[in-house]
Length: 137
Image (cartoon, rainbow, N blue to C red):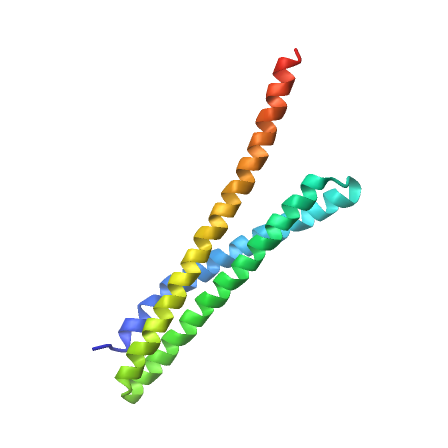
């Protein structure tokens, strides 16, 4: 048995996820703008590679947001179906909503991994530069 409150329980979680996804998007867009300016003043292949990575991450965030919003939309549809007495349909739609949320979270993990890999590349560059400086003394 599903009640009106069951899909409503996801509202706070979905809202917080969408806020987190939006913050990630805003941070990436700021980085892209900075890299674009850096490239305009000093073209470098590393900057182009970083922008390619950021483009893929932005695409993932777009899908994460879309799936999250779809999940929220379907939760509202489920509430309408339960209110109208269509509980069986509500069960199925709520299941789809949960699958969309799982997919959104999965993409979030992929994007987080890409972010970590990008940071590790930058850190390895710094370490290599430091090692070169120390050995040159």
